[in-house]
Image 1 (cartoon, rainbow, N blue to C red):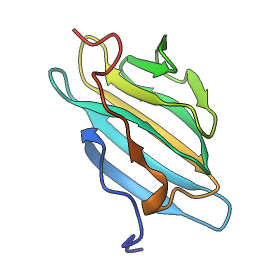
Image 2: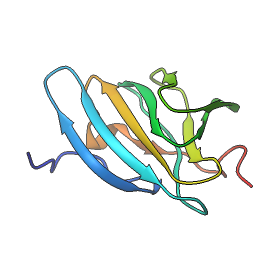
Image 3: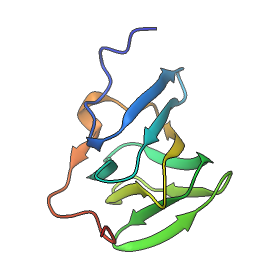
Length: 117
């Protein structure tokens, strides 16, 4: 399915999969070490869940960081600024958004990613 109404990336990462239905959207992202990360941003309408599939990830929400390993989860409510970055190697993350993430609901935030080296 072509996703012409999907948001542009915030940060640097590989987009492995991107699909949606009427209730939610799912994106599978790969981040390598170094400067790859999901940049700090906010959504006004959708809430998100980050599920680590491979590797380790730091998810920052409103200035507080949680470190996650495989199959661990972090939720992010609508209106909460957040970012994510890999820890100690490449990571693959599933990002679930409800309602589906629209192109106009991914707003980049200014400033560095909290906790980055």
